[in-house]
Amino acid sequence: MPNLETERLQLIPLSLEYVIAAMRGREELEALLLHNVSRQWPNTDFAQILPMLADELEKEPSKAIWNGLMIQKDEKMVIGDMGCKGGPDRNGVVDIGYGVVPEYRGQGYASEMAKALVVWLLSRKDVTKITANCLEDNIGSIRVLEKVGFTRLSESNGLLCWEFEK
Image 1 (spheres, one colour):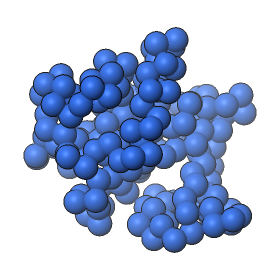
Image 2: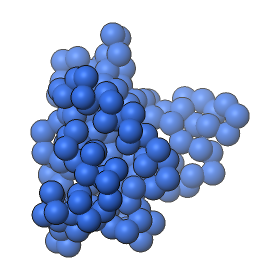
Image 3: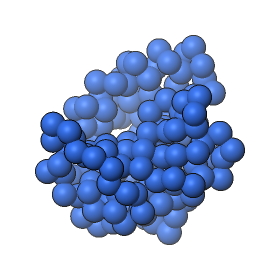
Image 4: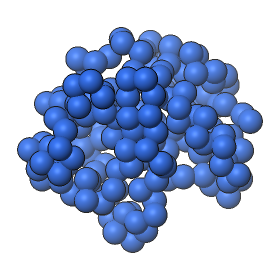
């Protein structure tokens, strides 16, 4: 993804260099980015996938376009991550995911950046549909997906499935 920018945020590609720095510690990522990194980032789930992302990016560095670090511009602070789980499949379907650290939730950051991500994805010829999933009790994520214009498709075992079609 190119650097995506909104009024308050910037989303920069999560390169192999950034992933390795994040795995080594917040201070190393801060030194590399020249930005602050919230003490709450990465969350437990994202921290667990960093090694898998590193392996994937070592094999295919071009996949860095599918994930990014969300930076709050005024504070120059990494407040979360957003991206696509592996890029579009052969049918052009791409699944998005995102996380904002607790201290920055409820301020519209995820919605603001998700809108920019959707616009960028829809401009690509290799993307025909965007999907997302969230837990049925994740009110914040439900609001984000509704604000961005996703349609709720189904619910199964507490997981809501959403889509945004061109």
